[in-house]
Image (tube, rainbow, N blue to C red; front, side, top):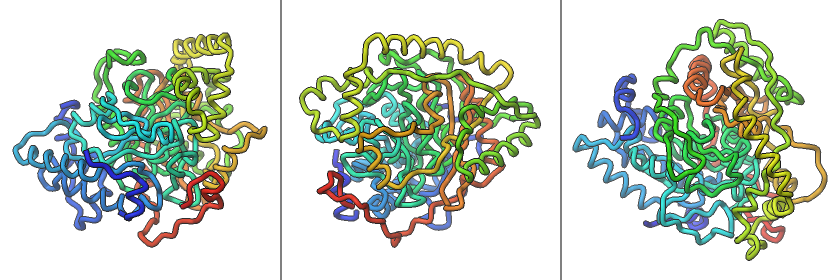
Length: 514
């Protein structure tokens, strides 16, 4: 398979889900200009392919053209599989012409976070440790996307080994936020969020151990869904903390997230985290009415120390939700999920690598692995007990409410420079104010949707979560809110001439020079 690495690319500037649900949607209209093809929703693109109004090659070319223009600015892709993607699109186009469709994503280009194994395509986890790693087998989620007819455009940049929340610490250089190139896009799935927000693909996969889908979704103004733990296979994904790792879709609309989840969800016997759950129609569930839905506001501690603009956007969103449901929102308190001392799980995976090539890890990752190495077995066991009890009892918190809502992030993203400096200096700091990690311990579905912008033009995200396996309910409320607002319709003001702010750091400082 022919691939183009990020460095080489930049230097040259270059039947899984039910078809009836797709057919039932209002047919999409082909955009007047070819340049607008990449801005279609994933569902619209899929419908146009199925109705033969747009070809998979046209969609793939539209995305690759945007990758050629904007990846040198955003650094979202590590590897672009241009030749393979076009070849795959041609095969899918021929199948469509013959009336054969593999699944609901037939001919639609997507991209994968680069900690998700792809057979024959390098999977680096954004680390020098894996700079030559080419898996021989697909991750289960990659296999499912392929079986559903998706075109794979390449592999997306991330925080090294998914071990951070900015996507600044990467062997391949930091990812930039499409809304402000001096800012980080969140992490660890920052490349996935940036690529979707900049219309370089119609959807992407991210992973989420402490918020790594939802944080970048919030910072980049897109939709990010962390499903119930075990609903989507994590086999074939480079682990961070296995007990907390989730995989899910990142898209520009809630309907697109539902469509991708339809493909991704399902039992995987070879994944020890996978759980058997009756098949659901998430696309249909996302369209259910939300009148009468009982909403809880998780104010403590998730509303503490909010940025003023974040508070304003979230309070406005709460008013909209109250109108949509016709109910009175009530404050609720969720159980504490901290501290969870599970870092030794991370070290367990890396031990054979870390003992041989510690110097090939980025400084912050190296430090975190050392902390995992030093963890006490008794502390780890107690934390595992705590997580298991939380997951058995978390649904009790939803006795009087159907979902809870809260800000996805309390603050807006730091600059890339500030993120790099903070991550590399090992000095005592105040704790990070984050709202996402507890939901990984709970193991319940949580989605981030755009709910506004700051005065500086940075996106703000709203998180909606529900009890275990309530994806349909969560998606329905998220989609109803999306339909009542237009935040998801806004686009970053990127142009081919947008300058890329220089980083203060250079290669002499230990970071790549832009």
